[in-house]
Length: 192
Image 1 (spheres, rainbow, N blue to C red):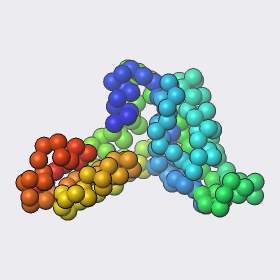
Image 2 (image 1 turned 30 degrees about the horizontal axis):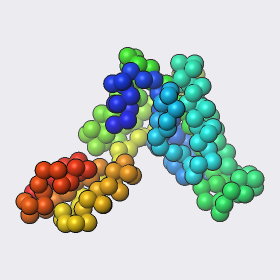
Image 3 (image 1 turned 90 degrees about the vertical axis):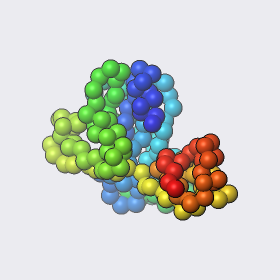
Image 4 (image 1 turned 90 degrees about the horizontal axis):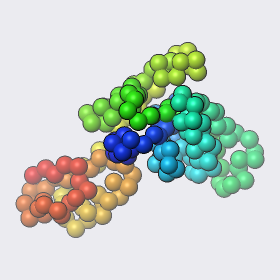
């Protein structure tokens, strides 16, 4: 949704895509973050410690108008200082793909189409970033689908949580009064 809004507004952004992960990492291959040229980032690849470097990588890709990649390695003892070490002791490779206004972006188009069809999009790394990758595939999976069986008073807050997580959410109920217009605005689909 954010990528579509930025495209419609003619704003450049970078897609940051985790393409490899080893050891303990917060995100695995196929995870996405979006960094707009104007500054805001949507999505994360760590508990916060890698995001400044992720933003810098995205800005480098935008400035160059070409893909850029970085390896984030948190396997050293120094990385354990910031907490329990959860999500540390791992290594991930991230690819930043610039998306310029008015220019096609095959990766973005494949991801958006996959999300619309609720199917994974498999991307060939060598095609996305010639010279950075000789071969390899990465699969971007659509967010989970939450099916709420019942539209009672718990449904609106659960839908809000699902939306915050970026999940798709459907609600099914047999009671027409609970499925009325405007009552469940965060549902992607309402089923009777």
